[in-house]
Amino acid sequence: MGKEQNKIVAGSEERLDKSVPVAQIGNANLRIQQAKNFAISQAQQDGSTGNFKVFDSPFGNYFVPVVPTRKDLAA
Image (cartoon, rainbow, N blue to C red; front, side, top):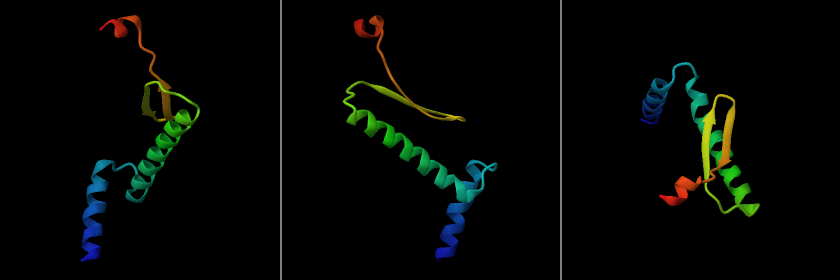
């Protein structure tokens, strides 16, 4: 029964993106999430109390501060 469950999980992961082998999809997502968590904790340790936007690109993860404009503050 354990093998059947693995096949179901692997099959559904495989449908997400056929260009990446199934075994690497979970590892890539885990590494991305770990990188985001590390960036957030590092910013908090550095004393940051602002808002941040986290986004991914093909070149890496980006963690940038969100600086509100006067229009945002007036709303």
